[in-house]
Image (cartoon, rainbow, N blue to C red; front, side):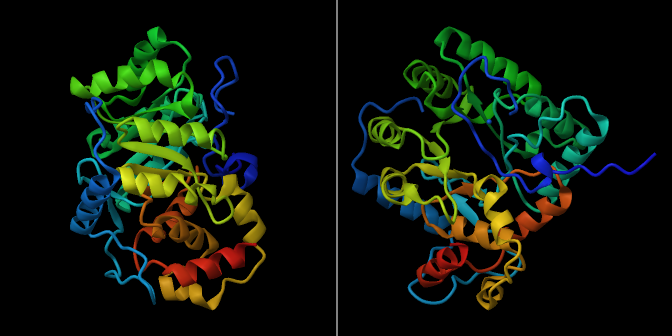
Length: 343
């Protein structure tokens, strides 16, 4: 039998891409609320305190931010101070492999290597086809269900259907509860946020958030962030797509909201464009041996970013991505050179 290589979608590196949630579209193809919000200044001070306590590597005025060679880059979740490794794992497209035993084995290998490299946050959605079941089967076979920070989403326009969908997602993952539940691309967010906050108050989920991707609905996103006591937000951020730097990242910092960066490789397009270019000499200064590591370190160097979630079905690409979890981070001057190199 010929050897079958498990490749990313379109036979290239693939990053998470989330289409707007529209029920009926083929899948696999895209605290309790506090009584009144605290002041942005107070939120920011708490966030900075938690971040410093967690050993967050901030961009410094000059030179790369120092870090022990093998120490993972950890970020604090502002609402609790709990720390997360700065590189997570997405599952859009790459884990939607159905019952293909070879492809499932590859996904299990990716999760095995992800956990071995110190990763914890795995992100999925009921929109992602068979991804939830594939993740659940992999975690069960590895005996690792309790080791992950399970992040999933609600993706339905109906509040009545939301709880049933969440329960089905939980069953597919095989977890006792999710660490984080997010409203997928703001679909029915007015319906679902009260449900998620009530679940958090009852101890059925630890954190609540919202998501968007590819620059969609940022004005509404900012409004929700400003009015609701969210633990997490998730949006697209990479060397090319930097719109979140204008309002969303500063607001997340000031409001004490964790930020998850999806599409850090621009759904593979960024790495495809950079593939033929020599790696600049400055990459070695921040411990990078590939463009993938450069792209990820750019994202996680922003002090408001909690975690980036690249997606891949290839263990070799996973290991490459996870190398960005250690070593120094670029300072603001070097980040500007990174942007120029990606143009």
